[in-house]
Length: 204
Image 1 (tube, rainbow, N blue to C red):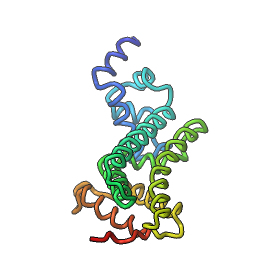
Image 2 (spheres, one colour; image 1 turned 180 degrees about the horizontal axis):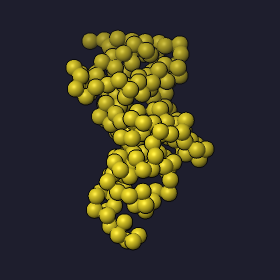
Image 3 (cartoon, rainbow, N blue to C red; image 1 turned 180 degrees about the vertical axis):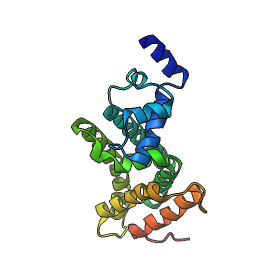
């Protein structure tokens, strides 16, 4: 019977389908409002089939949150590497990647922003470490801008956190059928981020 369940789960997409169902349910019902039965029904498998991939609902949540943070760190790091040489160039690139991620992967990003309170101690420690890694990417660019005298904020660390929070907030209200495409929203928020750090206007 176990092998039949395993084959059934695999034939329906296996782990990826279970995660997709969990994301949908966590977004609409919240982590605590979602049961393993809800996840199984959404994935088209039995609850027993889920346990071939995950030991618990908590492990599913941790998997989603670690994946989303790992992916956004990769995306923002790539943007930073490919950015121009100035702190302003780098902040614009970081914010652009950050905002686009939170529009294109909105459901996962929303769970990542709102469900850290639902993690157990080990999961919270892991996710917090990844969040800190992402934040330091922003803080490093802002600090460099302040040291060079091209960012004039008196509160660089708080400014960095405010910019990061912009992305988190977008995942709560952005509509895919709304008037702004992700790239347009990213451009506007990059402009706002330069205002937060009080960037010196570029000279022609």
